[in-house]
Length: 249
Ligand SMILES: C[S@@+](CC[C@H](N)C(=O)[O-])C[C@H]1O[C@@H](n2cnc3c(N)ncnc32)[C@H](O)[C@@H]1O
Picture 1: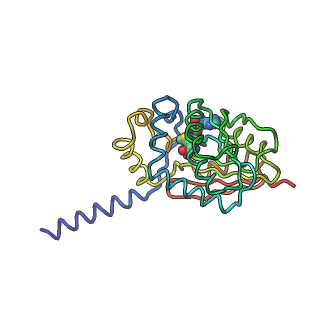
Picture 2 (picture 1 turned 60 degrees about the vertical axis):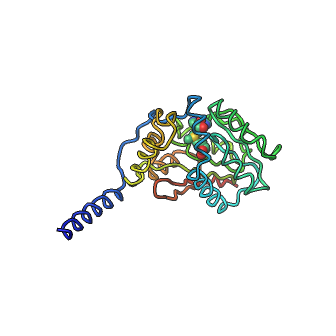
Picture 3 (picture 1 turned 90 degrees about the vertical axis):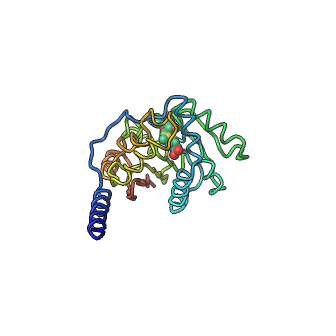
């Protein structure tokens, strides 16, 4: 009898593991996600201090080091500005400008960063990635995390990033990938149901963001419609990095 129970439990476990490892294939669903209300912005600011987000920021900084950023770095969709704080400490020779479309997020980022002693090295501006508040060819590096899936006109946004970059400028985008394994979606569902503050749950975060995210192939197709000369995706478990270079003389 005990042997049969162990066998059944083992079979169920194997079934769950095999199902969990399968990558999800669903059409992109937009407008489920969004951190726009004051309550959601305040909640997002709070959860950004959780270890999971600190881990993601470490991942991004580690990836950035590979591209030897220099000069002026713009963080598009900078949210509450925690990544800028980590980058400003990790790359003391760089200047940073955060841009975000949500005025309240801009205020939040300004509050979070103003007391950290970065002085004129860090600035936050209100703006849309589809119409960046910079002259042509004035930015050395554009970084963006967990924001791409929110952009209503991603082609235009990427073209705009290309416009503001200097001739040898680069960008690094980090985002969720929709074709994540089922395990990843189970984890996000668990977080949405039991862990995140109600204000995030009521805007369907974080599962809404995963469903709105692109697959790496879709991201590459978007880039092929821009003036970037080079790009590549680095495919992670439930996320991806997209790097691109303008690479003009
Ligand atoms: C999920 S938050 C990510 C914030 C931050 N980058 C992080 O990793 O925690 C997405 C951010 O992108 C911003 N955003 C959405 N659409 C945008 C756009 N068109 N232009 C600039 N920012 C945008 C939102 O206001 C929000 O602050």
